[in-house]
Amino acid sequence: MAISQTSYTSIVTAASAYPGAILVENFGNHCKTFIQTLCGYTAGNVLRADSICSDDVNGPAYYNGNIGQMPASFNDFQGPFFAGGIGGFPFTGSIAMFAWASHVQYVTDGALLLFSAPHIGITSTGRLGHMVRRGQSTDSNTCGAVGVAVLRNLSTSLSGVPPLSSDAFPFAQGGTATNAGSGNNYQQYILNKILWDDTTTRRSLTASNVTFENKMKLATESIRRATYTQAKSNLSAAFVTINPSLSDLVKDVFVVNGTFINVDDGYQAYIQVNSFELYKTKTNTFVTYTAPFTALF
Image (cartoon, rainbow, N blue to C red; front, side):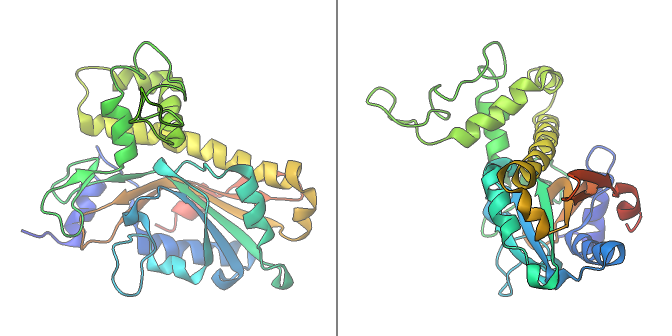
């Protein structure tokens, strides 16, 4: 039996899940309001970049009711520029940040908004790391790439031997006669490397008494932290290393990081916000506004 969105919210914000999560529509509207109040930019004068997993359920909220769960309120911003890969990690790098920044609406003194987040599903029955997709009767693992890292490679790459990009499927860059199953899976390798390098999380992921659901949350959080660090590094490199004159075109970049929470088809998704910052391009500094932003919730 279907539950209400309010009941779904109670499940998502339970102590074991994401207590700070809010509906995606509210998040999008809060972004618009906060940015305009803080710096005067209207949403139509802000170019957005999304570093979020390439999963189809993370697509824009199309007008025809497609399956994308991103907020329709985000459509008031320009874009998006696509900056992420599987797991939401900003695989397109500093070159992409440079390209995106150069597309700013400089005639009208525009700004940029960078949203980075891995994603994780929560079903209406409270199963973490899963969601029921449209046209399917049972739930499936979400994010699948993180699930592969947690389950398929748990006994090898996350135990005694660090993963290498030349390892067998699903990491290897190209197939061979003796390893025909391998393919271009460098991004999957990176997700596993993130979890390998995070020794605290790795110990939990390899513990036998930790459930798959908790492992999914732990792995997602580890990737979120890595995504946050890398996204800011890419952004800084675009303005400092690649082309310092970009700061003459754009002064302000709003940088938001969190976890995107997918839900069963037919419900509105959620976002847990971990940070809201303003990057001042002229001084290459990040100013934190997380507390006043989340106070809007």
